[in-house]
Image 1 (cartoon, helix red, strand yellow):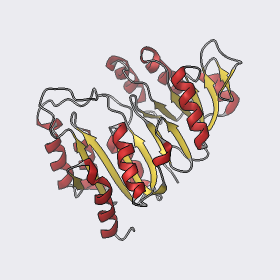
Image 2: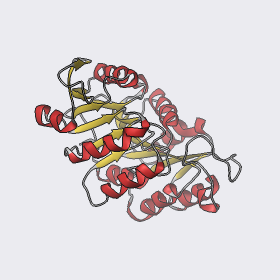
Image 3: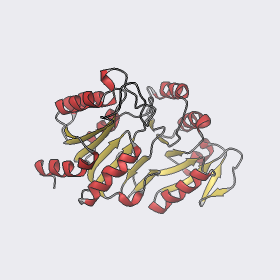
Image 4: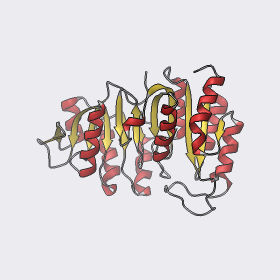
Length: 294
């Protein structure tokens, strides 16, 4: 069993007729992802990238049985696109859009509470289960099927970590970029919970960054619930306090958001810490050998 997406996933792309939506949809289809529909209001009845286009997500779901949404809708309308997908009964929603207003995400987050919907993003690279399905914008050639789960707040560091793992012959079960905004639909802890229950995941690489308390929350879960070995890298060790670095969520406010505090919390939970992104692959290889997994 893979988490979030697998070879049976049926994807509807919201914003498929836009430049980015069209380009990335084509790449997902090339990877083998089953894109069954697109949605662009006013364009219903057309086709895009070989998929029928509908005016609403509800129409797309009724006609095709889509069970996952990939969103490329521009920032001002992205939150409404997420809510539309939720209303249509889509259980897994991946929102790639960058720059979604924080107040819009407050509304989305309130609607997610108590629901069974899993939102990945916004401002994320998406999700990939190597060899089965890609729902996002990841460069698919660096991924290799295997048993190491990868979860990251940084999109580009997903690719860096995976490239190192694959070069060492260490494949991945599922890789998730949760997004770098202050408010996202899925936390590091949420993905770790799924990896802990996934029989196809034997170990995890976690990539965090400065800002917020996501990593401390993850560390508490790891300490109390996680039985699988974990390797972690925290980006932003040299960032000056009070200055935003890259992602909207990567701003230090007090000790909680510092890289050092995050490293200490994770190390105390038994996580193997990498001090440099260049060490992710070699550290994972060492940890896997120590646990008899390779």
